[in-house]
Length: 360
Image (cartoon, rainbow, N blue to C red; front, side, top):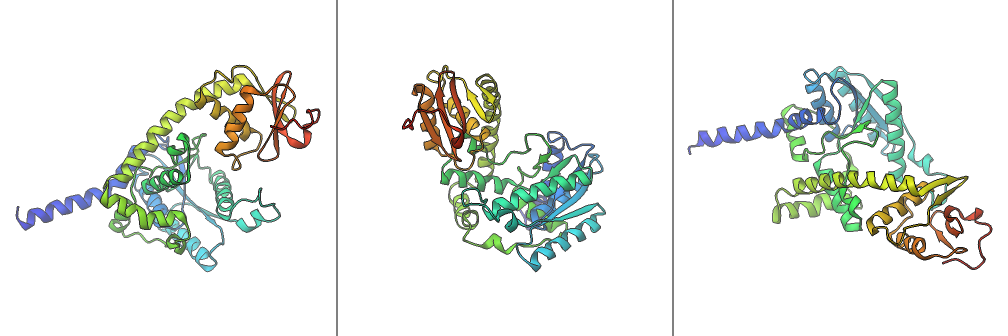
């Protein structure tokens, strides 16, 4: 093969990579119900969201969708945050699409709360960001909110959960849509390399967030130190393999969730500020189903981030064996009580009438 043939093959390969994002988005339009809708793209100013906004705008005509942009200024990086906002507003003008901005204050969201109830700065920023995006979507009459999570983000999320400890549902990673279908993530099958190739091919400009290089964050250490070696030494298609695993696990989890919902409706009911739980059949309930029901009960009563595997195991043992008059204290100020009618879960302060000294 002469040099011209090599050059032609390389050029064709580059064109394939450059068009990969557009192909991925065209495949996602149908499954994510984007066709014929107005889509708000959440744009931070970074390369991923800039490429998503540009690529969706590129396919908007043939796929009959409208694009608008939304930006949330968290104010965490001072002048750099304001420069991010200005860059997004410039992108909207370049694309000729509507754009709205909201400013939020994650520090204020954390103020005045005890350490157990106070969200981390990242959690506060995320909560406020999504609330602001929903507000912008309503203002701009957008039916979908598209975020720029990609295949690399998916792999990092699954691996971090695995390293920190997770159950089967955690391996499902980032879903391609929210339960109500309003938030969608059309780039989940696109790699960062493909996104960078698209940005280069179209001459796009984006902002770099300096915190992405901060080694204090576990995700950055995974991204810059560990994943490159795993990809080079073990599996060049590692990101695709993890994305496939996450998708398969999500499909299984969706099927399981339907069964859990049926059992939940049959076993749980509200009784004032208490959750009433049927006592029968806990000993015969499969472990995987029982564990999911226990977690659902805790979440319904307000215990989320405080729940660990140990708490679930103690709760399941209690549901299977506790006699009337016993109680089990749980995270978030909750108590599970066994009475003659079955079980009830609610606030510890309201657990009157329980046998003194009966805590398990």
